[in-house]
Amino acid sequence: MNFTVTVQPSGRTFEVARDEAVLPAAIRQGVGLPYGCRDGACGSCKSRLLEGRVIHGAHQHKALSEAEEAGGFILTCCATPQTNLVVEARTVPGAGEFAVLKMPSRVGSIARPAPDVAILKLQLPANVAFRYHAGQYIEFILRDGSRRSYSMANAPHLIEGGIELHLRHMPGGKFTDHVFGAMKERDILRVEGPFGSFFLREDSDKPIVLLASGTGFAPIKAIIEQLQHTSSQREAVLYWGCRSKADLYLHDWALEAAASMPNLRYVPVLSEPKPEDNWSGRTGFVHQVVMADLPDLGSYQVYACGAPIMVDSAQRDFVASCALPAEEFYADSFTSEADKHGD
Image 1 (tube, one colour):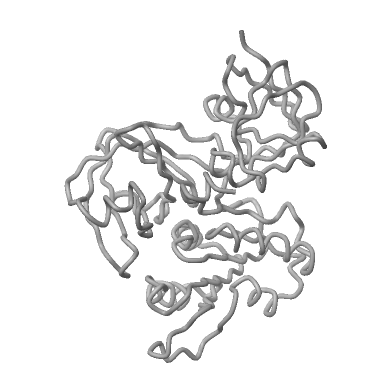
Image 2 (image 1 turned 60 degrees about the vertical axis):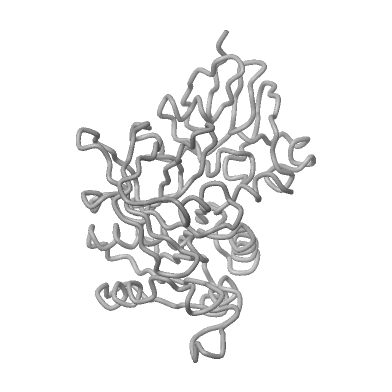
């Protein structure tokens, strides 16, 4: 037995199989709903239920509180319909544009630009036409069926050299312990993608704030490469927040990008610079540095990626204090497995 979901105000409709959540059905049928983690942790897929009933699977309170649920909100990633539904959600043009593919990949290279960061290059099968938007992510499918998500760090036009991924070592993490331990070149890994509604809205000419913390820089790098590739005339400023200078693992790349792109500025920010860093640049919480520089974000779009606390703080404070329109904040929280299973 299938249920029908109607999305307002777009009027798009799609079918959801019995015991299937709304979001995976939408992805399967190319309907572009907003989403991030697909695990009930980030809240990016939060939508208003106008008609019908759902049952929610496991999710974090910060993604959907009891008060929000009582007020009619749902998480489409873990809401299973019990009736036909009418859901209010802004559709994301392009989110369902490219086919989601499962495929083998071969480890082409592993670089270590920082002690706890690996840059992985994955070679895809020659007969697979893998297409994605700069900013989207893929998932590794592990032997036990569990999954790990990482954003592509290179723009689509640069895929011939392989997919580039930036991984931070999470000690005790099933996947990253393997990457930083036993993984070697030519290993075969199974992946699926592309996923995510975090990517550059190219139909706008608004100036852009690109906000990253840690390895949240990965999809931001892909977006910068996309801006360069399309010769975009939009003004953009990159704020990259890390603890110490060693954590700015592609600092030289960012400097070179800003030097070669007249419309791009780069502002690195350190929260805990070490004495040996001899740091004379900006310090503090990266989103607060943005607020100090750009107290009025009313005419901007913001693309933020990194630790959930940074993304959540930026969204709250930019909208409340800097006049950023709520619908112009686009985000991808880097939710770890620990984040997903804690609250």
